[in-house]
Length: 91
Image 1 (cartoon, rainbow, N blue to C red):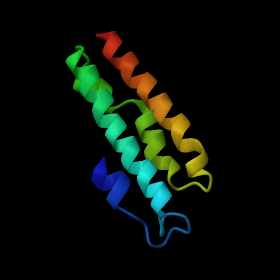
Image 2 (cartoon, rainbow, N blue to C red; image 1 turned 45 degrees about the horizontal axis):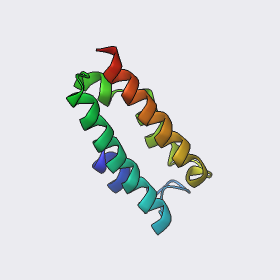
Image 3 (cartoon, rainbow, N blue to C red; image 1 turned 135 degrees about the horizontal axis):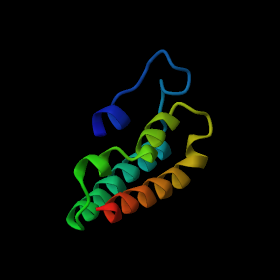
Image 4 (cartoon, one colour; image 1 turned 180 degrees about the horizontal axis):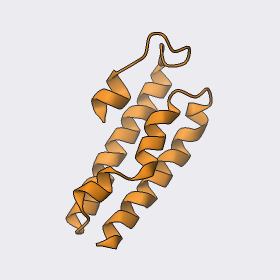
């Protein structure tokens, strides 16, 4: 997730070619939230595959290409947290 979401940028994409400090902060915070929530879910008995493949994680990573990313990131992280918790409860 760090390489694909945080470090990798597309120089030919109007939005992704530059990432401001505020967006970098929120992206790093989202990665740390994912790590923490995923660890808790796996310790609670969740399956690794279910935790890693929650749809909200992919949505979060794709949303960085949109103009209103900073407005949406908190909601996307909250959605990801709920889906990870649900994945842990399934098992």
